[in-house]
Length: 170
Image (cartoon, rainbow, N blue to C red):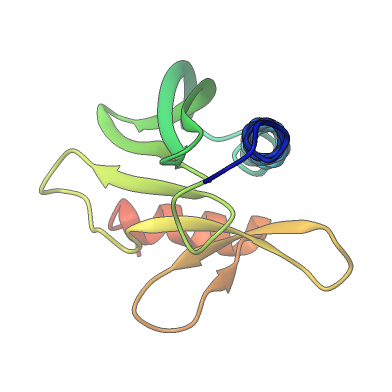
C-alpha cells in the first residue's frame, strides 16, 4: 500500500524529472543548432574568400568566373533535424568549357566543408574531384585540393596549375 503523501511525492518527483529532462534536451538542441550555425557561417565565409582569391588569381585571363546561389540542406542530428542555408556556387568558363565548383556542405563530413569539382566536357581533364576546408593549428581555415594522395594547399600558383591541367593546356 502507498499512503497519499508518498503517492503525491512520487508523482511530483516524476513530473520534475520529466521537466528537467525536457529542459536539458531543449538546451542540448539549442547548443547543437548554435554550433551548426557557427560551422555554416565559417564555411560560407570560406567559400566567399575562395571566390575572391580565385578572382584575383585569374584576373587578366580570358577565364570568366560566374557565381550563383545554391541552397544546401543538411541534417544536424536526429534530435535537431535539418538546417537549410544558401552558399555561392561558382563556375569557371573558358571558350565554352566549364569547370563547376559545387558546395556540398560542412556538417555531414569529416572535413569542415567540401566543394565538388565537376567538369562538363571530355575535352577537360578531371585533375581533382573536390576541395576540402580544413582547420589549421592557428585556428584559421584553408582550402585544399583533395585526391587519393595527401591534400594540397590551394595557393594562386597551385590553382593556376590546376586550371591549365584541367584545360589540357601544356
